Length: 159
Image 1 (cartoon, rainbow, N blue to C red):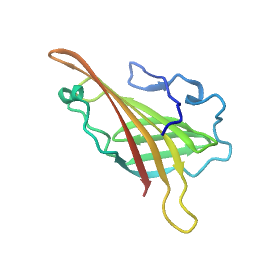
Image 2: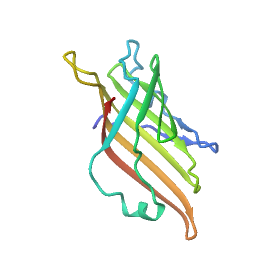
Image 3: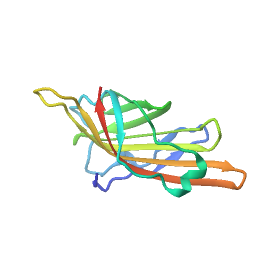
Image 4: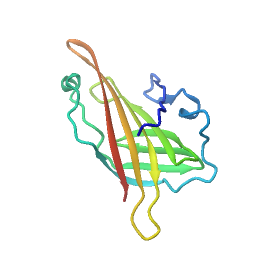
């Protein structure tokens, strides 16, 4: 997705991700007032590709899913692989979801999903999410703190 939007994310000491950019998108994009039925359970599929070499010592993996999405008005909550997510759906059907956790081996993992909801066709089919996933990972290893970032396109099909 090439919308040019980005979210500035801060991770608190409790491991909660907080979006610092108001609306987390373009200033002319408003949260939805007539919101799409984005809520549901989605099967995740990431574009092919190897993880960056700097991720190898961290033993990280992309989220497997399912991606669970709940909606109250334009506000979204959800989970993926035990990571709590929060975000917004916009009038354009674009959305953002961010979250973070502290893995059992220490460090942090921050997940950001941005994309667009594509409704199911009237003649059948299922809804889909398409967009970009960004994961930021850090671990404290015997050799010191190490970080890596992963960006990957994804599609998610509503179950």
